[in-house]
Image (cartoon, rainbow, N blue to C red; front, side, top):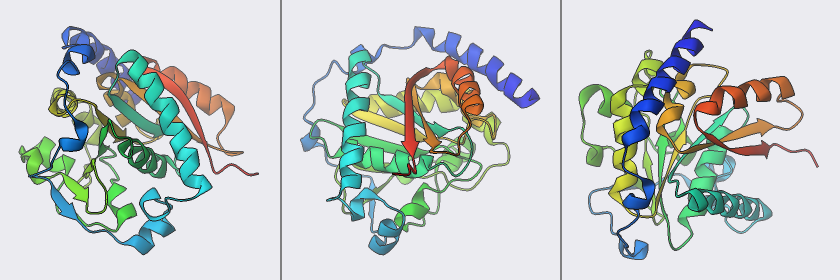
Length: 262
């Protein structure tokens, strides 16, 4: 509880510091043809198609009702984000094993298929980074190396070889001081840099569950909005209400019901 209180205080301070940042409208003022973007420095890597199918990743199961569900979700999300000129989105959950990482990946892939957007998916679960494992990719370094050792971003970004306009920033080695690192000014500055690099870029952050650690609360003021993944018949209403209250430091778009029983 003490760590959560500390995270909330840092969140308040960060929100006040961000008040003078350049507006999203200014960032999008320069028109660029998304389809003409070529990733000359981003390493293209081949994943494991069988593992992606096993993990229910859209890149391996595009033509299905499952893919259609994410297309509906991505359309709703982008309508709301475009309305407010937001470009950074956190995907989190109430507790563990509710499907937030799968949701973050598939939402990113679905948005990247739109002709007007590019997507950068950031594995910001620094205590237990796992996005790469869903693709069968084993990157040597990631976000933790940037935060701790100032490794240049161009050396860390990877692009699944069979996907256009979808790039991943892996988490890197797990950090025991993840709360302090994810809530640092350096991390918030990185968010701004990632959003500014390309017009019409959507930056999605896969974050830890809100009630498990203080990491997400420390970082929430740095991003524009958040989606909360909940599990059908498992997530408690009281826990969800507490999660929404704690995330009041950012804009909560709503919830995603996962593992629904029909």
